Length: 113
Image 1 (cartoon, rainbow, N blue to C red):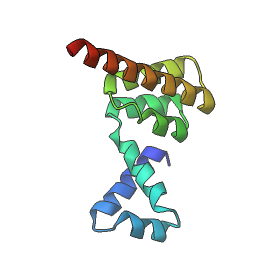
Image 2: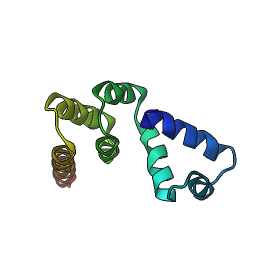
Image 3: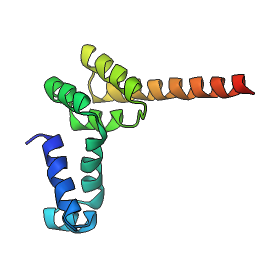
Image 4: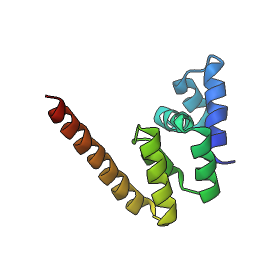
C-alpha cells in the first residue's frame, strides 16, 4: 500500500470520531506519525499522481509540503524528479527554494513601502 492510500485510510478513521492519539495507540504508532501521514493529503491530485509515478520516497514528499505555494511546489517537484535527487539533495534544494521565496517576499514588501 502506498503512503497516500495509508493517509486516506487514517483520515477516514479519524473522521469517524477517532482522535489521532487514539488512532496512534490502536495502530502502534505515534500521534505525529498519524499527523504526518494525513498531512500528505494536502497535495493536489495531480501532484499525488506525479509523486506516485516517480516513486518518490515519503520523506521527500513530506519535505515538499513545506513549500506552500502550489505552483512553486510543482516546479520543485519537477526539478527533483528530473535531477533524480536523493533525500539529502532534495532537502537541500527545497531549503534553497524556500529561501529564495522568502527573499522575493522581502523585496516585494520593501518595494511597496
